[in-house]
Image (cartoon, rainbow, N blue to C red; front, side, top):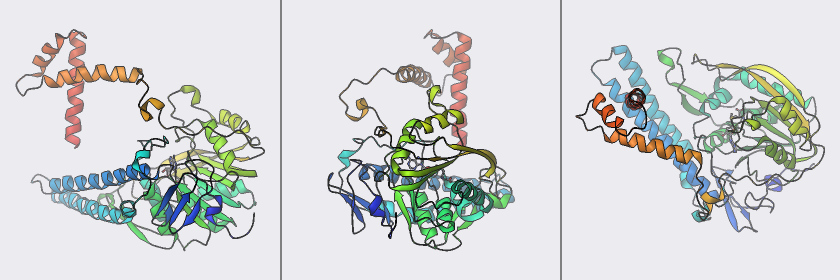
Length: 454
Ligand SMILES: C[S@@+](CC[C@H](N)C(=O)[O-])C[C@H]1O[C@@H](n2cnc3c(N)ncnc32)[C@H](O)[C@@H]1O
């Protein structure tokens, strides 16, 4: 492939999966679906349901800022309490001020989420079943930004070395990074190889807003709040996030869901999936087919990271040997597997830090395989609302335990003792007296402790 790369040349509609997109004035459009996809802070927002996904990320942004506000007030109140030492007061006051300042800085960075008006109707919400996983909060990978753009030289170098070794001197050509996070690896690969173009995809706008600004040459300050601060000065550390130099041409950011990548078939020579394959909720075999479709014939898939699938079904919790078999069955050559030990998120301000035994593979695409089924985040009975809601064991169990919890809590009236409550509960005859005592005590301890932590 040659000629100057235009992002639009590899884009396809994430709704209908095939129509090319046209670019016009900070928007992309699918004429077949008659939907516009906005750009936020200069990054195309290419989710199948642009309005619904924007609504979800806005909510997450609001929630994050509100949580910081709450934390600020809690720290301030603790700092003004009479029974803390001067040293503790200093720590609490500094932490409170850093939290307030951080919220303000984050609010500025996230402002593009609020500004962009949308044309697609919110009524499409859920119809394409691309709802975001609830465990993927806006700040879930916040530590990655400090590693990528502040203190993580050794870790970043180790990641780049894995890709450089996998390329073995070949040019990566048109390259796509799926789940790119704060974008350091994509920047390094683009700056240190002769990649023709680098397309950087993630679904978290906080990470990509930041990555785009930093790789364009901006310097951004945000606070790191280490999990296990090493000293009193490490509770809130203002970090400067910056790249050595602005990135060369050809680096493109795309906000989209890796389950519905908005790209034409065979658009890339190299697909990178750093620390991604085992956190996606879909079956590994489906992801392999999806990556096959993104690659041109002879293109390569380079993966590295952990291998810890969390699927409820134990049959889907694959090992490296099973992954290798599935990759080879998905139109790739037998993958080359590597094992590397490397540091992971070892902040100089934290006592926490890991060493990971990282599994890598490189697999060349040999042939096309039948297309992966469309990703469905939600079942028909939830999306269409017409089928009966199935009596799943989880609903049944939750109904029963909620009923019992509600009954126990209804017995608390400010006068009854613990023993009175157990005696009243005994009359339900759902468990022995000893079991009732233990269960009620555990419930009350949990609620009491949660209150203490608030
Ligand atoms: C474990 S982090 C790894 C980040 C980065 N690759 C690195 O090595 O630092 C996983 C990344 O995948 C992104 N991600 C998770 N699910 C995704 C999805 N369905 N579509 C796009 N990105 C996703 C997360 O936002 C996060 O940035």
